[in-house]
Image (cartoon, rainbow, N blue to C red; front, side, top):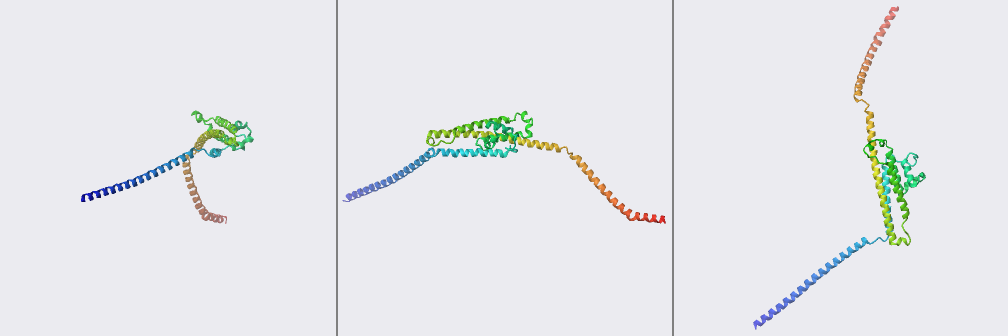
Length: 298
């Protein structure tokens, strides 16, 4: 009887253990399933965010022509600032009211518009013409330095052909001006919503803008050369000044200064002696002579 009771007790305990193990396994399984689902959900959200960001990068702008216009304005402002900076660095800029003194400006105008000097102001403010104007100013600044005539530049083959540089930049600028005129303003109407037309216009605009940037870089290099010539002029001016004042002999002037000081002392001594002698003569000798003269007359 006791054996049966013990057997029943063992069976009950075993069943209880099995139930407890089943509940634990279920709980752990649910926990890990939840963790796996949560991890999958977060991965899905990250992937979705990454895809969304990628789509945002590659998605074309809603207003490509507006975006392009902004790019072109920034590029033009950058080129304008570069030209202004170059002009500000020049020591002797060419002035529009300086007729007949700017051969390089005359050359640039001849290439730009056939030589009409009435078009000077328009040349200065034109988005392409400003590059030509500034180039002519740089060339004139170089040619006005007396040091530009030194054979140093030819002897060492470092002389830039000013006329050739103005001609090259002005000719390229005229070609770009004409092509910009062909391209015209941004397409409008049905052309402004045509993807092929808009893409072609953007491509051509950026191409021509890049060529203008290249011209400005060449202009800046030309201006750097002008600064070198200006510094050579400053060194020549310094050497000429030193050569001129070297005619002043320091030793000779030191000796002369000492002689002048000695002469000054001698003259002062003579002055002192004269004062003493004059006092003796006027105070003693002169009255005595006068008294003797009256006595002799009596």
